[in-house]
Length: 241
Image 1 (cartoon, rainbow, N blue to C red):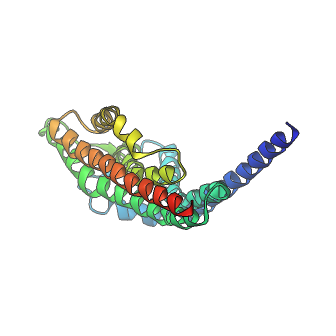
Image 2: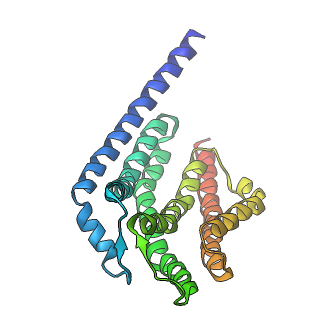
Image 3: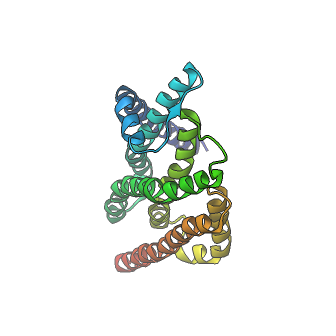
């Protein structure tokens, strides 16, 4: 009993250290982004057809903090993934350690691809659709806070959802998930993904389809990749016997 308590304390202490490193990386990236936030802001708004406004000094600070947080989140993802890998590494075999280590850059790349998908494809379609609804009935006046809050809602979720295949591959490699379990819950996963696409898009059928199809495709890709990892793991286990 005493030994189990010591092991638990050791795991919790290591987990605390991993969380501190991750938090420290986030703070460093946040400070760097805060220094260059003006350049980031001008790059984002350079092609928008509207003039943004602020309603008070707090809105300016909100933009600084929001943009810095988004950049820091993107930069911290590979650091957090590496810390998770270091935490679970003792429970992995040598070949599993090498394979799962490759997931770290993949997480960052897929996050950036998801952001680009939302920013360059989904956001313009949804934004232009909403502007077309005014049909010259209103004067389009956007605050910086409202615009960037809408932009984040159209991009960050895709950055996170695009990491689904890699996360599932990693969980499969350490034995938490398997492709057959994913197939069994497919209809529930479809429902959640379609509901997500409806919630983050305006109420029109085209936007829902444009978002739902990539999400469903990502889930099917996750099952396929999970099968590869699962069967490879079984084959390696059979060879070691």
